[in-house]
Length: 102
Image (cartoon, rainbow, N blue to C red; front, side):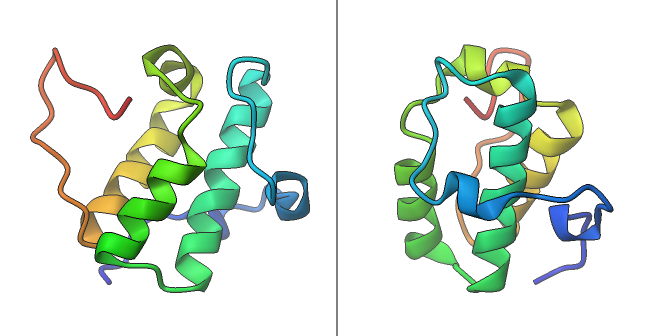
């Protein structure tokens, strides 16, 4: 997998145990949403999840997210998630003004 910025590069601690059962994105704070994204990408990286396995995990992990919740995540964290999915073999459509990750 190509080298790119990842949550593991950050000095910010991530409480991965907090997110082992997912998140209710509708009730989560912006800080929690960002922490959750970082924890999920770190987990995918640690277990080298790729292709269809990665796609299934992403769908399960982000099922409670809609466009509003994705927009609350910092741009850099959305870019890290998008890049990891793309590099991991998940098709990500070309980015346009009318399409977002969420």
